[in-house]
Image: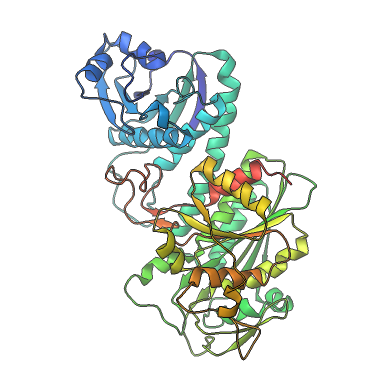
Length: 506
């Protein structure tokens, strides 16, 4: 989509649709909404006074200009109450109104930067949120569908601003929003791919393609390198599949400092191995590389934004399948740091491949390491599906920065305790540790397991409950189902990682 910022009056725009806004309970129209209303001889005022449009969050009203404007249509979108207003409501309003515009067959949209006036959000932030919301809300996954689109894609988004002093800020914000949305949507594409199209080698090829597009270094290591690195945990998980593992290494050099390292779990399909999962719902296990997708998307967005940081992305990727060569319960694997692991469940495989990657991360002498993984159903039980991801952290300053990034992006992350008592749950008589401590406290034992392979400030994000959305937006659950989150892969974690890197304080 072509995204641009234009100096002028929105009521003079010739786009297929003009989008303006209204806060709930505000009886007197202001700004661009008032200007459009005057040209339309008070039509917006009439629908507000009649109670047909009250400005509730994501409420829409479509009006037709009948030649009074160059644009044939106007969409008024509600922003909710002023007291409850925040940046995420800008994303939501932009997404929902853009989706309505597409439904109406519009090819071009002209919009104001919602919240940059009465909402008192700075122009760059408002523009970023509008572009993010629009591009995320209009996302479609159609790669393997032959049916024609019901409505063609929106081709142009124009942010219109009459105050020339805000143009530079709006342009910077719009560029940031487009870069972040590109990273999120790439992650969504990867998550949505069927597992026969996204074998480990295909995930590696996708990382290479992204790196070439944005100028990031990408090295793909094969199984021989993995053996040389003595990554026995990763090798154990992959041995049931005929498709060889890959180890993807991304590097963005925006600064000379030691890097931030992002590690993503890349299980391209998880059957559970010999500890086979139930057949019902197993198709969702193509999403088990959601952490890897988030790392690829975040590195892309960081490169597009040209942030002054040094970032490394590490992605161990393989399949977890049952076969005559698969690893078994009671096997003992040796990780890169020589710690031995007794296998209790082959379905607790993500922590195994992450263990070797976390060991390798130490070679970069990182400022901090964050791993993202669809690791446990226990985290989904604890925090709810599509509500929040859990995170564990061994460093309070890193935790504080993660919470700020989470709040700023509305990608909810809730800190959970990393108690030493969880170590007793994974104690083994046959090795240094077990790969699972049983059902009780499963999210805690998975994290304390990972901590055994870290030697630096570290955080683990369990994104199992957030990686996909089975329904998409519905007004019935407006807090959980957001208009810019489309059914399928969500790309969760990309925006929070980018925000963390954008405001990183060493």
